[in-house]
Amino acid sequence: MDKFIIRGGHRLSGTVAISGAKNASLALMPAALLASGTSRLENTPRLRDITTMSTLLETMGVVVRHPGTTIELDTRTISSYEAPYELVKRMRASFYVLGPLLGRFGYAKVSYPGGCAWGPRPVDLHLKAMQALGAEIHIEAGYVVAKTNRLTGADITFDISSVGATGNALMAAVLAKGTTVIRNAATEPEITQLAQFLTHMGARIDGIGGNCLTIEGVDELHAADDRNIPDRIEAGTYLAAAAATGGEVTLKNVDPSHLTGVLAKFREAGCTIETTVDGVSLRAPDRLEAVNVTTAIYPGFPTDMQAQWMSMMAVAHGSSVITDTVYFDRFNHVPELQRLGAHIDVTKNTAVIHGLDTLTGATVMSTDLRASASLIIAGLVASGSTEVLRVYHIDRGYEAIELKLRDLGADIQRVDSEEY
Ligand code: UD1
Image (tube, rainbow, N blue to C red; front, top):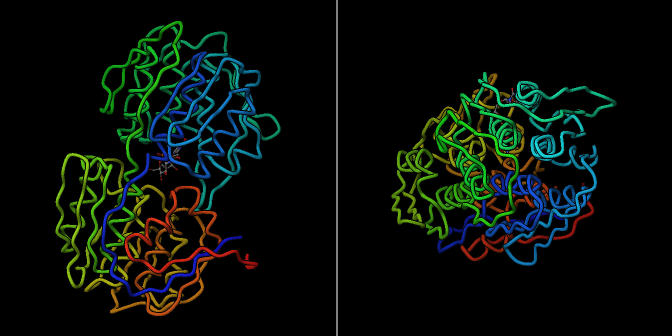
């Protein structure tokens, strides 16, 4: 199993190209199930989660080709409507196949996702939406079995704004009979991208980008091509790495409009930020100022940036408070950051970080994707050598991270390790 060895203390400096958005791709790929033919999605990152989604679609009979950054999905030979436990347990986004399978074939059998690294992550909103659209749902031997003759348009109001439930409901409703209204829909750019791809496939959706989506169901969709948006969390992670090391970085291939809330926080911390239509530059101050953040749905500060922000705050001037209102238990990175000397206290869903002059290298363990990113940032700051174990988590969501960081001047090596 690979690990990273990082020798910290180098200011990052240079330009880095941002890859396509993982979380958008994970919605766009199952959307291709809604029509027969070949869909091509440009700017699809080469990541472990994308491979898992490809494997899942292949088990259903989809022919997948992903030679460069364009993925081709040929759905003419679909022969199974099942998402097995082995794949759903590896990646919860596998649950995204429920809506399209049900909408197009009237049947889906999808393993019920278990807990995740940071506590329970229910799917009740997904299931309620499918039921509102007329599906019969049973739980059988750990699987959600959903059936319908044809889904029927419905008025759906989500209690909580959920990215996954909105995506699933949208993909189910585009082929339903009649009109569906989704209220309190997620407005994350990944959902907007999904809705735009669905309209390229022939879906009729009003209100794209807002929190109320109106869908006129159609009888059939067709395969389509699209270009994926840039990954705003990967972008934010490189900004955090540059800021924490007192460096300067220019991001290429980004959409600064997706980063508004995040960039405002970097400015508050003392960074100079400049944007172009598809670029962001950051210059860090000698020492970052402590800045509080509270995670929220888009366009608020993303929970997927919370761990990376904490690493920055661990070496900022003063004390800061981070509250995660999206996932209450998402603090697995804290004990590992403490191994590097960080001074952090957690009570319920709030962490108080007392900034120190520096951190000290140690061996730490990745527990999930964004926690791994935070440990790498902390390792880049720490004096001496830091070993980050279990980097398979990072490979789920960051394309060639050590190469991109090395181009910015980081001393980071991937080595094969016996340690688990
Ligand atoms: C997506 C992202 C994930 C990100 C999260 C929040 C993907 C593949 N993953 O996850 O990286 O951290 O959005 O921005 O896009 N909830 C329920 N019942 C449900 C569904 C969700 O109570 O049926 C709750 C969750 O526990 C959470 C909140 O709703 O508190 C938001 O979660 P949600 O937006 O659904 O996250 P995901 O789509 O799973």
